[in-house]
Image (cartoon, rainbow, N blue to C red; front, side):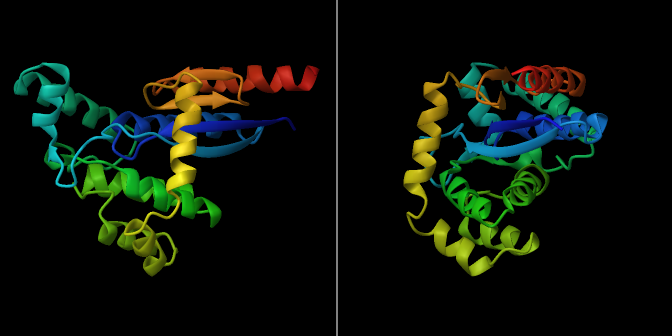
Length: 217
């Protein structure tokens, strides 16, 4: 069986990242174990300069894209519908705030050392889009860490410290240098970049192509 590494560059504040991951799950279900996939999450901050209090999401999106509130609300509702078709909880999406997620990425880096990064990523997507909670709030990170079987005290302590700062900043810079300027981004075996929440069949074809190339080496 051929092995393919996927670096998934993502932010827990990105709705398309949650959708993109679910489509990746569908692709892997289609492949049915045909390819041994190693998934490694990589950090990206949509709102790197956002102050701690954040900003109401529609207000933020209107300012960012220069659109009126009605247009941005309709766009958000379309994203919510796409997410819900995939079984994702986006019920709180319109009530959320735009937040900086650096603390979340640092706790996720730690979760990766415990082999629980995917579980915590999904819990934080649920917290943000389903419950409209701040995914970088130390108390939320504690709560979600406990939900997935991690130590809540450690998660909260990391969020309130500067632990894993160097690791996250280095990873962010590495993938920006590689040309990632929007998320989600799937990098297959460090060679191919797939941008956006592509349909499952696109991911299936790409994974098969890379696996075939690996087999012929």
